[in-house]
Image (tube, rainbow, N blue to C red; front, side, top):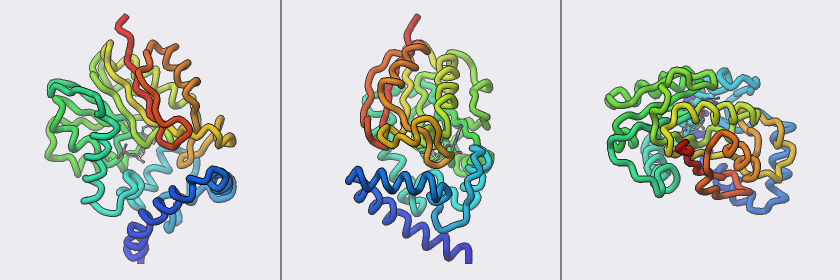
Length: 264
Ligand SMILES: C[S@@+](CC[C@H](N)C(=O)[O-])C[C@H]1O[C@@H](n2cnc3c(N)ncnc32)[C@H](O)[C@@H]1O
């Protein structure tokens, strides 16, 4: 029974995502839908047809989502083939856009999920590390990446103490901070990234930039997280010693920041 529901959901999900995105182009509709989902149905999301209850615990909620349907929860894709294709596209168009990797570099992903992005990246870098709060996601990532000898996976509680100082050339995070219930948890990662990144290294990350969803400015859930505006990101990153290279996609779910760690 579960597998029938899961199969239906996997095929229905891309249609749901596409139609919600299309309808969300009308901002008032998007606001009404988000308010309704946030306040009335905070558990409806991924996977919508399964009875997943958000408890507010990031670790517990992501473990549950990973157990119900890790592919959908981590990548929102229906099958392995489209998951791999989406990873390659994400690397080209987002994560590595304008970034030169010389093959000798060390890269870190915050919130690596099932390792979808780490897999193709492992062919381009010397060392690839992924941290995640969910043990279940990491278990699946370990299985998927068992042939990639330069990939290292770590369980985190929101910190990076298992990683060396001054070690990484690039730290990135995609589809993770958009699910954070509080901004302080995001800023905690900023502080950690300062330590593990080499001076001059790149920090590229994704947040929800729909600041007009005002009910999510201070507090969010583990699915629909807090929203940011470019000014607060600039202020905070500046305080931590980053120079902002670029912020794209403000006012959208896909707001991306590229920051460089100052040399001194
Ligand atoms: C939507 S998935 C994205 C996975 C991956 N970045 C990708 O694009 O394939 C979100 C991931 O973030 C992880 N996550 C959530 N909160 C986290 C936290 N505080 N620290 C690290 N990882 C976290 C979840 O366990 C989950 O694996």
